[in-house]
Length: 185
Image (cartoon, rainbow, N blue to C red; front, side, top):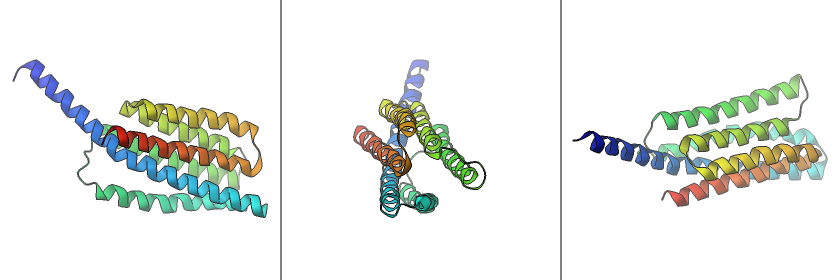
């Protein structure tokens, strides 16, 4: 095998692996997008109709429900390749969860802050970085729209209407997953 044939084989293998990882990650984008949409709408409606922001504590159940569902979805796809890019994306989203949970706990028990602004920025950043690693423009663009659009909007909206930012973010996350899934059937 010549050096150019060897390089072509390596390139083809990496591209096939990236496509398989994208196809597999589309499930995660769809799952978390749908969950985010459902939770944010439920919290918005409960807060809106009762007038109580205490419904925001339901966000803590989001991860408790989402992570087991994600494990079920990813265990079904045992043939998905794993490489450093796939692992890095997993770490990015795990860090997003840890940052969001930690900042939320600090805001609830210690220093009040605009959680909507911070978490929507983190969400958009995590999605965009995932898109960069996967070399996928729809993921990068949707992440940018969620993060920057959400940050600007969070400064304009007040009370329970802020929860709708996460509804929009969830819809964009799910749409991203559907786009990626259709690209890499």
